[in-house]
Image (cartoon, rainbow, N blue to C red; front, side, top):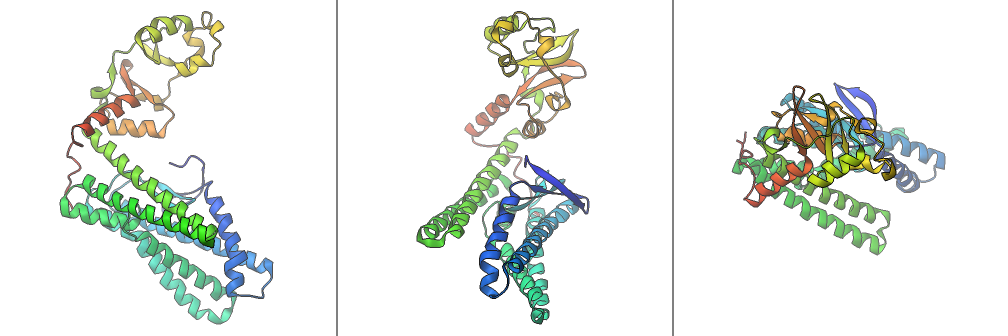
Length: 382
């Protein structure tokens, strides 16, 4: 999901990672707190003091976000769901669920865990701020962190998917209708409406002198819009593939090349003749690699008659191979997680076919044109 993340540590068995984009928001938080917030509420301090306060406050927000996502992750693990880890990025944090919740009750518990943690932190920090009120800077920091956790909880409780409140809404709709896909569609629609409201408010604020705050609000709205639509489309694709196996959707008995075949022959006798861009290389009935148009394009055409498949082919690796009995959903996940958009289908050592992203998308398009998924998203509520 995040291509440039750095693992920091493990907490309760979860990998805590930070995406490169987080450093952008961290720098902006430090700048806005040191230049605006703290000088306004505590005038007369040195710039070095304001900067130190801002850095500590940013680290406190960092810890608060981790605890918010950790609450989601712990409840999800208790409900039997796989967790890929916790990653902080530009717009906050995310606990990466490997599986969809199995019931509306599970979705409800997981969704509420994060805001509940933030509300609890806000209360505890608020009490600590009152106790430390006479301690000067400590009370100042604790008060800020109490406020920011309250904002984090309330914002996430907005009924707009994929925010936590939107997931609570989806759980309620799912419980009422028994249909997870339809509940996701309606909750995603609420997310889209909120996104447009946020973008509109952000633009108006920026135009009326709100400066960076308005721009940031519009960016959050844009993020919610994309995340809402992407989450629904992902579930839609998974539902359309539900119950299907690789062997049902693959292209069987693909055209192949031998290791000693020249690139010229592969281009003319295989790719152009049969209209294929991906050619497995087979030696004594064993797949040893593949040649595609991308690899061919790296070799000068004048070299094609002298270069063989064996000299340029890409070797096989586990991410390029699937078994015919694998579910189509898992195959799609494998494509999304790896660099390959075409997978070699093998049974034992025998080549059975090629599964491409086009094969999967074509099936999804037909299913949707016929009126939706398989109906297996109609799962029971609690």
